[in-house]
Length: 385
Image (cartoon, rainbow, N blue to C red; front, top):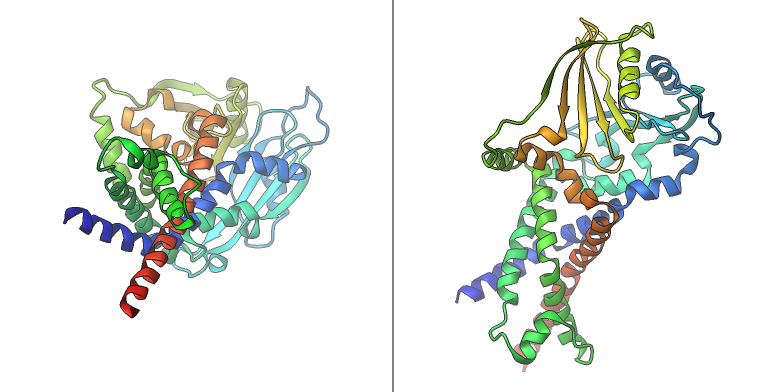
């Protein structure tokens, strides 16, 4: 009786959310390798043809000014992603959204990326990210191109239901007897059977091998979808750490007065003291605000290994450093959520695993729908006779 109820729930929850799960899984496949694919697809944006080894980047304020001049009136640079390695452009983002709008095209009022040679100040490319392929794939993954207000809840609840489908699936998969032909069929495919049986076995076997990583996708996805859920599991894992973690309080370090502007000296400090950093990110604030923050990424493709540098504009110094290595267990897990979700947690190996598992998850709604259709046809045939 219980298994019949679980089967009924598994079937109808899968039918309701199948299309969304298919879209999320397929776009997840694409986005897994977006860092690598972007560099391959757009070398003219991300790479500089020639650079002197002794070249020093221009002041940040100069580069921001050049990027701002390249944009249309009313569009404003709000973030800078810079790459200290020679031969890379720096990316200046200008973005404005309407959280209540319906549809992708209305959700983004504008979204531009300006690629600049940091050593000459020359604008190399201007990208309309609103229609860029990988950004469209991301927005399809996040909100089905319906806008955040309308698409986000559908994605969020479909993700939660997908976790329930996976858990109910393992109950339905569980072999009655752990021996013989039935057990073998639970772990491996017999290609000699008829296609309906093969499709049924394919759904079961792929579902089994996708279970663990599929659940990881779902849980980390829920952390993005429901801020309250993320806060809860961060707080829970923080309880497991008896010793305090967190930010390193440093004696205020005066910034060198190399440049005229505070933000230029702050960045100069970061570049000088973190020569091995692969990426730095700056959310631009108004000049009237007293703080400036710079995130230093030690690995360009991982957002969870970082140092946050907090600068005080009023006193012209570095007042605090927050390192990912010194976070509480829960906070560290929260910081790694993106890397876990996209498969970048341990480099190319885990990305390949994430890619394959995403393909497996994309196949589950297809094989599930075919099982349902085949059984529906069989039921109609019985009724007609």
